[in-house]
Length: 222
Image (cartoon, rainbow, N blue to C red; front, side, top):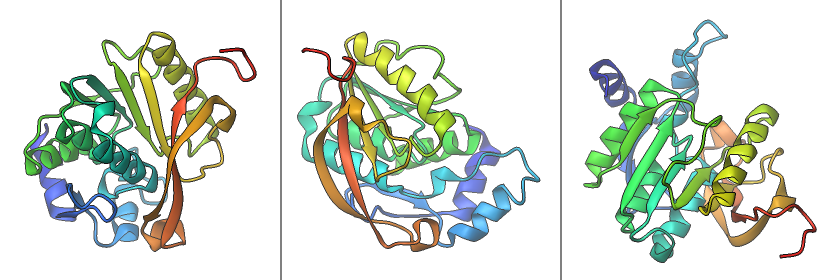
């Protein structure tokens, strides 16, 4: 964890309970738009947007589901993709995962995951890198919250998740109705009304679904 990135996280976010998963503490930004402009600006910076500073609806829903259904992850090796703040990985670790690995392309997010895991008294292995063109390694459960927000990301993510599922991993996704979720590839496990930042989502509550990936082609016999 970069000390500079960790200092940035501490400076711009404060530790507080997650709205829909109050069992978990995260470093969260009080004023999202200002931080977004600081880190991204008008495309003046190559720094990724500060996804790590907010508890997004898909991640909150997925973390709630894992917290309420610990048997999904207990004793299993878990991979949390595009982890952001680490919320889902932390929920998995708290629920008894044998190992929790959180992957991010943003160095500040990796720092946030490490700080948040420490604050919650759990171990999460935070990793910097883009793994979507590879595989899920030894993960037995793959979790992804709010990852279908763009067409390009959705295509790459689905290919990765299908490889993981076909290799034997159980794949769960939390999604608040993003446009690029291929619903025909999933079946619903749970649905929630999740509090969100109105400044980011233009609403205060997002209907959020936890889905499980079906590795079979749509319409194929099981």
